[in-house]
Image (cartoon, rainbow over all chains, first blue to last red; front, side, top):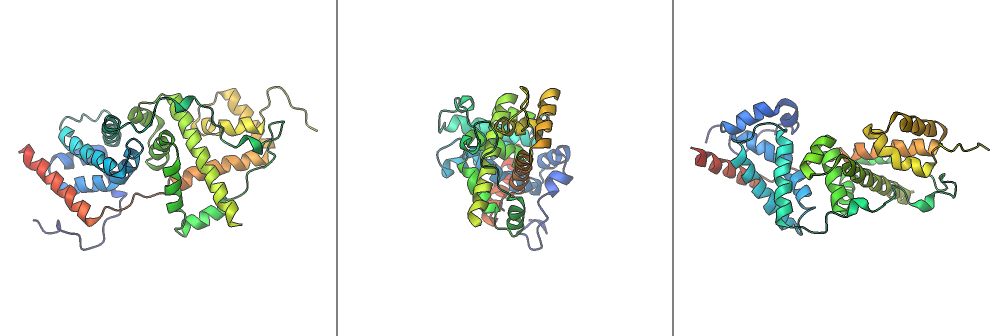
Length: 217
Length: 86
């Protein structure tokens, strides 16, 4: 083992290195040429997001873990053939979703988009369609609690409670920062359905924030 | 009392347009109607700000660290792959 490659002693480099300093081309080159640290930092960056996404498709955490493991293997095997037509990240997530879909369909996955689901409880509007129970302020309180490190776990839990397809879209768009085109490619959705799912997911989360801070008063 | 023109949005419709608005997928006229509604409606303006805040807060979730054991397992996985390559 070469010096400096063993169990880390010093401080770890901050995670953003991967996305900020490694354009795909360079990362690919490092992966293909045997830089195991490049692989580990790739895993570091995407393992948990992939687990969370996989959990939407399969019945248990254990199965999700298997799917993600398989995905890493498949990614390594496919690395030579990867042509860079999509980003490395889109490619990875697409492998994951394909594997997860064939492994287990947890629920009927084709229906939900068509069901109407209002962004806000209709009883909060009067007969003229105007607010009768308007949104309460919570932005500053949420910021304070987020900065104190006391909100992230709640938000993670809320995400887990979203319907699977909404969670998938919110995860990829708002946490992974993918574009709508990338999300459509990864999840095989139309633009329109992607937007509907995003709207419902975000609207639910907004409501959960409001509820959370209403209770605090 | 303000008279409601036929093409004016009401709040209940406006909240359903927030994502389309943020995604830039409203037509020009729909966008204008939406913005005109906001200009006269503090509650919907607050609502839009909350949706933006929701996106921002959600986006600050960081992936959790790998355990040292997982780090080792993945290093092994990679090494195995490399040795198969040669």
